[in-house]
Length: 314
Image 1 (spheres, one colour):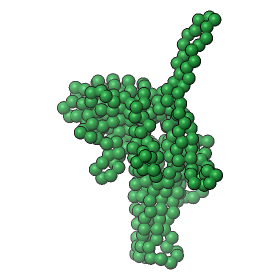
Image 2: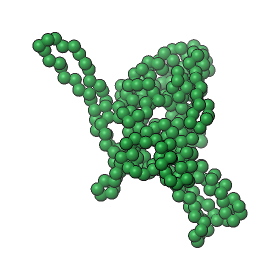
Image 3: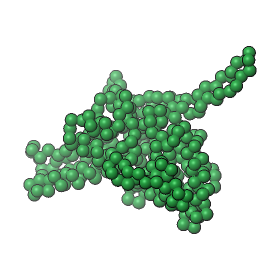
Image 4: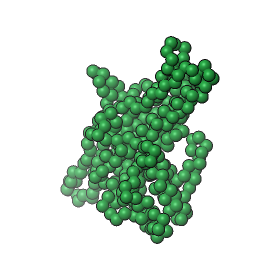
Protein backbone atom coordinates (compact mmCIF):
# COMPACT_ATOMS: atom_id res chain seq x y z
CA UNK A 1 0.00 0.00 0.00
CA UNK A 2 1.20 3.54 -0.74
CA UNK A 3 0.26 6.58 1.29
CA UNK A 4 1.24 10.25 1.37
CA UNK A 5 1.83 12.32 4.49
CA UNK A 6 -1.34 14.24 3.68
CA UNK A 7 -3.30 10.98 3.80
CA UNK A 8 -1.54 10.02 7.03
CA UNK A 9 -2.58 13.39 8.46
CA UNK A 10 -6.20 12.89 7.47
CA UNK A 11 -6.29 9.36 8.92
CA UNK A 12 -4.81 10.20 12.30
CA UNK A 13 -7.20 10.91 15.14
CA UNK A 14 -4.64 13.01 16.98
CA UNK A 15 -4.92 16.72 16.16
CA UNK A 16 -1.46 17.41 17.56
CA UNK A 17 0.18 14.75 15.36
CA UNK A 18 -1.81 16.03 12.37
CA UNK A 19 -0.52 19.58 12.89
CA UNK A 20 3.07 18.32 13.22
CA UNK A 21 2.72 16.30 9.99
CA UNK A 22 1.46 19.46 8.28
CA UNK A 23 4.59 21.28 9.46
CA UNK A 24 6.78 18.60 7.87
CA UNK A 25 4.79 18.89 4.63
CA UNK A 26 4.81 22.69 4.61
CA UNK A 27 8.57 22.92 5.00
CA UNK A 28 9.62 20.16 2.59
CA UNK A 29 8.62 19.59 -1.05
CA UNK A 30 9.84 16.00 -1.11
CA UNK A 31 8.06 14.97 2.10
CA UNK A 32 4.87 16.64 0.86
CA UNK A 33 4.90 14.73 -2.42
CA UNK A 34 6.70 11.43 -1.87
CA UNK A 35 4.78 8.17 -1.44
CA UNK A 36 5.38 6.00 1.62
CA UNK A 37 5.19 2.23 1.17
CA UNK A 38 3.92 1.52 4.69
CA UNK A 39 4.49 -2.22 4.67
CA UNK A 40 7.49 -2.73 6.96
CA UNK A 41 7.02 -5.08 9.90
CA UNK A 42 9.55 -5.90 12.63
CA UNK A 43 11.80 -8.90 11.99
CA UNK A 44 11.14 -12.04 14.02
CA UNK A 45 13.75 -11.07 16.60
CA UNK A 46 12.55 -7.46 16.67
CA UNK A 47 16.06 -6.12 16.02
CA UNK A 48 15.50 -4.56 12.59
CA UNK A 49 12.87 -2.91 10.40
CA UNK A 50 13.99 -3.93 6.92
CA UNK A 51 12.57 -3.39 3.43
CA UNK A 52 13.97 -5.39 0.52
CA UNK A 53 13.42 -4.74 -3.17
CA UNK A 54 15.05 -5.21 -6.57
CA UNK A 55 16.55 -2.13 -8.19
CA UNK A 56 16.56 -2.09 -11.99
CA UNK A 57 20.09 -1.16 -13.05
CA UNK A 58 19.79 -1.56 -16.83
CA UNK A 59 16.99 -2.36 -19.25
CA UNK A 60 16.68 -5.27 -21.71
CA UNK A 61 16.88 -4.62 -25.45
CA UNK A 62 14.31 -5.60 -28.07
CA UNK A 63 15.17 -6.70 -31.60
CA UNK A 64 13.72 -7.97 -34.85
CA UNK A 65 14.11 -11.64 -35.73
CA UNK A 66 14.05 -13.60 -38.96
CA UNK A 67 11.44 -16.32 -39.54
CA UNK A 68 12.76 -19.58 -38.14
CA UNK A 69 15.26 -17.91 -35.81
CA UNK A 70 15.17 -17.16 -32.10
CA UNK A 71 15.65 -13.95 -30.19
CA UNK A 72 18.95 -13.40 -28.44
CA UNK A 73 18.04 -13.30 -24.74
CA UNK A 74 18.33 -9.89 -23.13
CA UNK A 75 17.32 -9.49 -19.53
CA UNK A 76 16.95 -6.44 -17.32
CA UNK A 77 19.86 -6.16 -14.90
CA UNK A 78 18.75 -5.82 -11.31
CA UNK A 79 20.23 -6.07 -7.88
CA UNK A 80 18.67 -6.76 -4.52
CA UNK A 81 18.71 -3.81 -2.15
CA UNK A 82 17.75 -3.88 1.52
CA UNK A 83 17.14 -0.71 3.49
CA UNK A 84 16.52 -0.47 7.21
CA UNK A 85 14.08 2.08 8.57
CA UNK A 86 15.88 4.68 10.64
CA UNK A 87 14.58 6.86 13.45
CA UNK A 88 15.59 10.51 13.41
CA UNK A 89 14.44 13.68 15.10
CA UNK A 90 15.28 15.19 18.45
CA UNK A 91 14.26 16.25 21.93
CA UNK A 92 13.78 19.63 23.59
CA UNK A 93 13.36 20.64 27.22
CA UNK A 94 11.29 23.39 28.83
CA UNK A 95 11.31 24.53 32.45
CA UNK A 96 7.89 24.61 34.11
CA UNK A 97 8.59 28.22 35.13
CA UNK A 98 7.80 29.17 31.53
CA UNK A 99 4.34 27.67 31.95
CA UNK A 100 3.60 29.57 35.15
CA UNK A 101 4.93 32.76 33.56
CA UNK A 102 2.41 32.43 30.72
CA UNK A 103 4.96 31.56 28.08
CA UNK A 104 4.26 27.83 27.96
CA UNK A 105 2.26 27.58 24.74
CA UNK A 106 4.51 29.91 22.81
CA UNK A 107 7.74 28.26 23.99
CA UNK A 108 6.50 24.76 23.21
CA UNK A 109 5.39 25.95 19.78
CA UNK A 110 8.76 27.57 19.09
CA UNK A 111 10.81 24.60 20.25
CA UNK A 112 8.64 22.02 18.46
CA UNK A 113 8.69 24.05 15.24
CA UNK A 114 12.48 24.34 15.35
CA UNK A 115 12.87 20.60 15.99
CA UNK A 116 10.56 19.81 13.06
CA UNK A 117 12.68 22.09 10.88
CA UNK A 118 15.85 20.33 12.03
CA UNK A 119 14.35 16.87 11.38
CA UNK A 120 13.19 17.66 7.84
CA UNK A 121 16.60 19.21 7.10
CA UNK A 122 18.24 15.99 8.28
CA UNK A 123 15.93 14.01 5.98
CA UNK A 124 16.94 16.20 3.02
CA UNK A 125 20.61 15.75 3.85
CA UNK A 126 20.27 11.95 4.09
CA UNK A 127 18.24 11.87 0.87
CA UNK A 128 21.22 13.36 -0.98
CA UNK A 129 24.30 12.48 1.08
CA UNK A 130 23.31 9.53 3.28
CA UNK A 131 25.93 6.78 3.41
CA UNK A 132 25.55 3.87 5.84
CA UNK A 133 29.25 3.07 5.53
CA UNK A 134 29.97 6.42 7.18
CA UNK A 135 26.98 6.59 9.52
CA UNK A 136 25.20 3.32 10.23
CA UNK A 137 22.31 5.19 11.89
CA UNK A 138 21.38 6.91 8.59
CA UNK A 139 20.10 5.53 5.27
CA UNK A 140 21.83 5.62 1.87
CA UNK A 141 21.07 8.62 -0.32
CA UNK A 142 20.99 9.50 -4.00
CA UNK A 143 24.63 10.51 -4.36
CA UNK A 144 25.74 7.01 -3.37
CA UNK A 145 23.08 5.26 -5.45
CA UNK A 146 23.76 7.27 -8.62
CA UNK A 147 27.56 7.37 -8.62
CA UNK A 148 28.68 5.33 -11.62
CA UNK A 149 25.13 4.86 -12.93
CA UNK A 150 23.85 5.57 -16.44
CA UNK A 151 22.16 8.76 -15.20
CA UNK A 152 25.29 10.31 -13.71
CA UNK A 153 25.55 13.01 -16.37
CA UNK A 154 28.60 15.09 -17.31
CA UNK A 155 30.75 13.38 -14.67
CA UNK A 156 34.00 13.86 -16.54
CA UNK A 157 32.90 16.66 -18.86
CA UNK A 158 33.94 20.30 -18.84
CA UNK A 159 32.19 22.36 -16.18
CA UNK A 160 29.32 24.48 -17.50
CA UNK A 161 30.00 28.06 -16.41
CA UNK A 162 26.90 29.76 -14.96
CA UNK A 163 28.78 32.40 -12.98
CA UNK A 164 28.07 36.10 -13.50
CA UNK A 165 30.62 36.24 -16.32
CA UNK A 166 29.49 33.02 -18.01
CA UNK A 167 25.72 32.74 -17.74
CA UNK A 168 24.80 35.00 -20.68
CA UNK A 169 27.17 33.07 -22.93
CA UNK A 170 26.37 29.58 -21.70
CA UNK A 171 22.71 29.50 -20.66
CA UNK A 172 21.51 28.04 -23.98
CA UNK A 173 24.14 25.30 -23.89
CA UNK A 174 23.28 24.55 -20.26
CA UNK A 175 19.55 24.26 -20.96
CA UNK A 176 20.26 22.00 -23.95
CA UNK A 177 22.34 19.78 -21.65
CA UNK A 178 19.66 19.92 -18.96
CA UNK A 179 17.02 18.76 -21.44
CA UNK A 180 19.30 15.93 -22.56
CA UNK A 181 19.88 14.96 -18.94
CA UNK A 182 16.13 14.99 -18.16
CA UNK A 183 15.40 12.83 -21.20
CA UNK A 184 17.91 10.22 -19.96
CA UNK A 185 15.53 9.39 -17.11
CA UNK A 186 12.73 6.85 -17.41
CA UNK A 187 10.01 9.49 -17.19
CA UNK A 188 9.35 13.14 -16.57
CA UNK A 189 10.94 14.19 -13.27
CA UNK A 190 8.75 15.19 -10.34
CA UNK A 191 11.34 17.75 -9.25
CA UNK A 192 14.77 19.22 -9.93
CA UNK A 193 16.86 19.54 -6.78
CA UNK A 194 19.76 21.91 -6.18
CA UNK A 195 21.32 24.27 -3.68
CA UNK A 196 20.23 27.89 -3.31
CA UNK A 197 22.83 29.34 -5.66
CA UNK A 198 22.26 26.77 -8.40
CA UNK A 199 18.47 27.11 -8.26
CA UNK A 200 18.89 30.89 -8.62
CA UNK A 201 21.13 30.34 -11.66
CA UNK A 202 18.70 27.85 -13.17
CA UNK A 203 15.88 30.37 -12.74
CA UNK A 204 18.01 32.99 -14.49
CA UNK A 205 18.67 30.62 -17.40
CA UNK A 206 14.98 29.70 -17.64
CA UNK A 207 13.94 33.38 -17.67
CA UNK A 208 16.34 34.11 -20.49
CA UNK A 209 14.89 31.21 -22.49
CA UNK A 210 11.25 31.88 -21.59
CA UNK A 211 10.94 28.51 -19.82
CA UNK A 212 10.39 29.87 -16.32
CA UNK A 213 7.03 29.04 -14.70
CA UNK A 214 5.33 29.78 -11.41
CA UNK A 215 2.75 27.53 -9.81
CA UNK A 216 0.94 27.37 -6.47
CA UNK A 217 1.74 24.62 -3.96
CA UNK A 218 -0.62 22.80 -1.57
CA UNK A 219 -0.32 25.62 0.97
CA UNK A 220 -1.13 28.44 -1.46
CA UNK A 221 2.47 29.59 -1.86
CA UNK A 222 4.16 30.51 -5.12
CA UNK A 223 6.40 27.70 -6.41
CA UNK A 224 8.90 27.98 -9.25
CA UNK A 225 9.39 25.54 -12.12
CA UNK A 226 11.44 24.93 -15.25
CA UNK A 227 9.26 23.78 -18.15
CA UNK A 228 6.67 22.76 -15.56
CA UNK A 229 9.14 20.78 -13.39
CA UNK A 230 9.35 22.18 -9.83
CA UNK A 231 12.73 23.63 -8.81
CA UNK A 232 13.48 22.65 -5.21
CA UNK A 233 16.09 24.32 -3.05
CA UNK A 234 17.31 21.55 -0.73
CA UNK A 235 18.55 24.06 1.83
CA UNK A 236 21.52 24.00 4.17
CA UNK A 237 22.82 21.15 6.32
CA UNK A 238 24.30 23.69 8.71
CA UNK A 239 24.60 27.46 8.99
CA UNK A 240 26.98 27.86 6.04
CA UNK A 241 27.05 24.42 4.35
CA UNK A 242 24.45 23.63 1.66
CA UNK A 243 23.13 20.06 1.55
CA UNK A 244 24.17 19.85 -2.10
CA UNK A 245 27.69 21.11 -1.64
CA UNK A 246 29.72 23.44 -3.81
CA UNK A 247 33.47 22.88 -4.03
CA UNK A 248 35.60 25.42 -5.91
CA UNK A 249 32.32 26.85 -7.28
CA UNK A 250 31.43 23.43 -8.77
CA UNK A 251 28.15 21.79 -7.77
CA UNK A 252 25.59 19.19 -8.91
CA UNK A 253 21.92 19.09 -9.78
CA UNK A 254 19.58 16.16 -9.10
CA UNK A 255 16.33 15.13 -10.79
CA UNK A 256 13.90 12.61 -9.30
CA UNK A 257 10.74 10.85 -10.43
CA UNK A 258 8.60 10.07 -7.41
CA UNK A 259 6.51 6.88 -7.42
CA UNK A 260 6.41 3.29 -6.16
CA UNK A 261 8.31 2.26 -9.30
CA UNK A 262 10.75 5.17 -8.91
CA UNK A 263 11.88 7.01 -5.79
CA UNK A 264 9.68 6.53 -2.74
CA UNK A 265 9.86 6.34 1.04
CA UNK A 266 9.18 3.37 3.27
CA UNK A 267 7.59 3.30 6.72
CA UNK A 268 6.11 0.93 9.27
CA UNK A 269 2.89 -0.91 8.59
CA UNK A 270 -0.14 0.80 10.09
CA UNK A 271 1.83 3.50 11.87
CA UNK A 272 2.39 7.18 11.16
CA UNK A 273 6.00 7.80 10.11
CA UNK A 274 5.92 10.97 12.22
CA UNK A 275 5.25 11.02 15.95
CA UNK A 276 5.36 13.72 18.60
CA UNK A 277 5.48 13.78 22.40
CA UNK A 278 4.79 17.13 24.05
CA UNK A 279 5.95 18.15 27.57
CA UNK A 280 3.59 17.14 30.36
CA UNK A 281 3.56 19.79 33.10
CA UNK A 282 0.96 17.94 35.17
CA UNK A 283 3.54 15.64 36.77
CA UNK A 284 6.37 16.36 39.21
CA UNK A 285 9.71 17.58 37.92
CA UNK A 286 10.92 21.05 37.01
CA UNK A 287 12.12 20.42 33.46
CA UNK A 288 9.88 18.64 30.97
CA UNK A 289 10.89 16.97 27.74
CA UNK A 290 9.30 16.95 24.30
CA UNK A 291 10.31 14.87 21.29
CA UNK A 292 9.66 14.82 17.55
CA UNK A 293 10.59 11.69 15.61
CA UNK A 294 10.28 10.32 12.11
CA UNK A 295 10.87 6.67 11.19
CA UNK A 296 11.53 6.12 7.50
CA UNK A 297 14.02 5.37 4.73
CA UNK A 298 14.07 5.79 0.96
CA UNK A 299 13.98 3.26 -1.87
CA UNK A 300 15.10 3.86 -5.46
CA UNK A 301 13.46 1.14 -7.55
CA UNK A 302 15.31 2.10 -10.75
CA UNK A 303 18.53 4.05 -11.16
CA UNK A 304 16.93 5.73 -14.19
CA UNK A 305 14.20 7.19 -11.98
CA UNK A 306 16.76 9.64 -10.63
CA UNK A 307 19.86 11.31 -12.01
CA UNK A 308 22.63 13.69 -11.13
CA UNK A 309 24.07 16.40 -13.42
CA UNK A 310 27.70 16.99 -12.38
CA UNK A 311 30.16 19.84 -12.97
CA UNK A 312 28.06 22.98 -12.95
CA UNK A 313 30.01 26.11 -12.09
CA UNK A 314 28.11 28.68 -10.08
